[in-house]
Length: 406
Image (cartoon, rainbow, N blue to C red; front, side):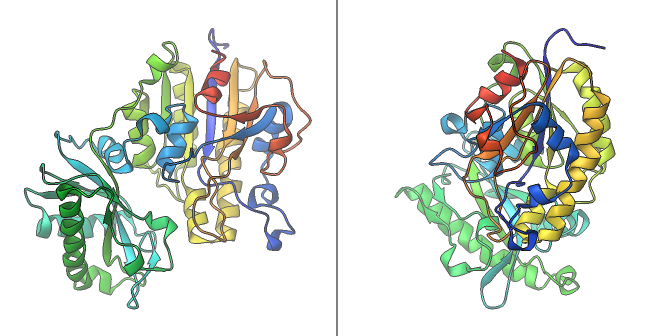
C-alpha cells in the first residue's frame, strides 16, 4: 500500500552520540556497534547534523526533543516539570509550579553519587513516593509518582515562583551537594521563599528516607529528592497547526516525551512493558509504530535506554543498547515499510559521552532516506562521517518539513 501524502518515521536514539573511545580503537560507540539498519539509512540517503540544544537553554532531553520535532524551545520552553505533569494527567492551576523530582543517592560524605538511585525499580520508587506523599503532602506541596526515579512535585500558591536556578542531577554526579543548591534566579520575595521552602523540604524528606525500611535493603538507597526544571502550564505549538494539517504520533516509555506529544496534540501511544531501559518492550514499540503510520503522517519512535547507559558511564551497556535498538526497532520497521511512500530519519537528541556521563551541546549526526533524496557519498551512520554529507546543518523545524516534504 502506498500513501497519498509523504509520510515519515523518525528513529530517536536518546543520548547515542559520543566521542571516540580508546577501548574501541578510536571509534565511537555508534561506529563500533553493529547497526545495519542505521547504516542503510545513511548509505541510501543523505547525511548531516542537527542543532538540538540552542544556546541559553538547559542541555536536557525536553529541549532537544522539542527541537527535533520543530517546536523551537528557544521561543516557548516551559520547563520539564510541567511537560511531565501533562503526561501524568496532573492539572496545574494558575500559579502552580511543577518540578521534576528525582529520587537520588547522596553518599555519607555529601556527594551526589547517582541521579537515579541505582535505576530504582518502578515498584520501589512507587512505594517510597507513596510514603513521601502520605508524610509531606499539604496545601502547599503535592508529590506525584512517575516512572522509576522520574517523579514530580507541585507547589501550590502565589507565594511560589519558577524563577529558581537549579542543577540537573544527571549532569552533577560526583559533585558535592553543598555546591548544587537551589538559588533564586531573580531577587523577588517569591523566588527567595521558594528556595527556602524547597531546601527545608529536601532536608526533612532526607531524614524521612534515611529511616525508611526499603532503603535499608538497597545497595544504592534512594535517600534524597532532587527538585529541578520548574514551570507553569506549558504552551507548545500544535503539530497539525504547524505542519499544514498533518498529524503525528509519539511512542516512548518516558513522561517527558509523552508530555511533549500531548502538549502538541500528537497521539501518544502507550506500549505495555516499555520501561525506559534495556528491558523495554521492543516488539511492542515496532507493532505500535506500524499501526500508527497507517493513521498518521509522522511517527516518532523514542528509545531512552541508550541515554541511561551513557549517564551510568557504562560503555558495554551503551553498546548493547545501540545494537538492540538497531536490531529490534530500526531493522524491523525498515523491513516492514520497505517500498512504501515513507521517509526515514535516524538521529540522537543530544550527545552523552560515557566518559563525561552528561549531555553536551555538539550538533548530532542525522541521516535521512527516501525516494526523494539522492544519496550522498556517506556509507555508514556516525558522528564523524555525517558532517561531510550533503544535508548540512539543520535547525528548528527544517527536519520535519524535509521529511514530510512540505
